[in-house]
Length: 247
Image (cartoon, rainbow, N blue to C red; front, side):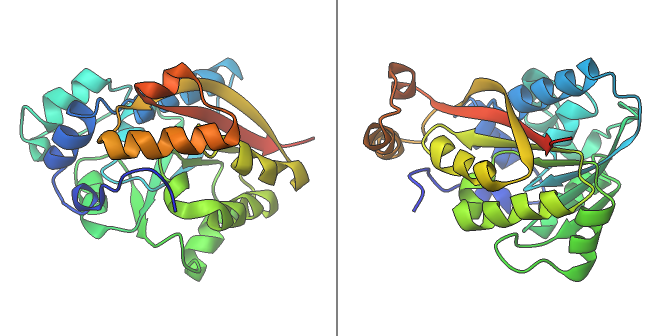
């Protein structure tokens, strides 16, 4: 069982206001902003000039898309999704290099994201179960950039392993994912027997702990692994990684 807290209630609603208030503002959740900035800079430095068919797994309301394609900041999201009615703000223009499809277990956040222009298509799917044939075919044959940020602990080790195997046999060029510090070593071992090379783009502050119970559980897990640092006392830390096929 993951030592992280659960936030299921906030993930199910059409409007992102409750999610933004509780998760972003109260817990200072910075993961999608830091991760998508690192990813965007990495791809820009590669000199990528092609349109990337991009699939975001565990997309929720679409903050990853808002940051990667539209370059929105933490303060922008608070402005448009918390202090104003998020349904009145439509995303337009954006970086033409990203054509975005979202995948999530909950229908309502996906509908919101499409309604405001954060994706051109979406699939509702529980990634812990067998993938519907249409989604599996899309991920394997059509996707260039696969993003799985903030969902890896939910997936668990076995399902993340399945996702890595899908990437190996697919046409995916880049697989971006986040690993909280307390699972990093065990999940990284998956790649030792894969055909993928992994680069760590950076270690970032993910968010504050939900409560003392979560903080204690995470620190205990890190100490058991011998990977605890004083940085972990105050905040949940995550590594942002990108995997790609070895030529």
